[in-house]
Length: 185
Image (cartoon, rainbow, N blue to C red; front, side, top):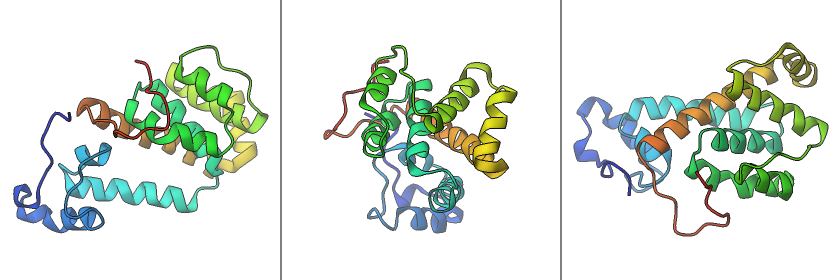
């Protein structure tokens, strides 16, 4: 169970109701699950964060497969059950190998990936391990995707880290229906 009750419109200060209404318009006036159920406690912040992720999802130069790879690597690095559950199956559907997804989930040595995937994996893993990316990896990402792609990849990592912090801090429940085993933490 999440650590705080579901926020209702009546609990929202008047100055935040427009943002709350905007953010809950597609969900019947509440947000009951996911990191958004924590972030809705500050409706304007959630609206602004969602603008960023909607932009990335629609405009990113990074292929969906590499986005999903970055998401599951972030989920594992942050031990975030919710994000793992939300993206592991999607990573598989986008073509990330079962062997890689399973090894990542189980915190085992990772198999080598095709070059484009390995490059993204190296970038994400270095970001979490060293809080930096070495020059060789950075240059390779820029050569492959441009400075825009490097910026977007860094932002994907940061955005999903933000979501993981919220999901973990608020202990967001996993949905009953899952297609993936729970991430062991």
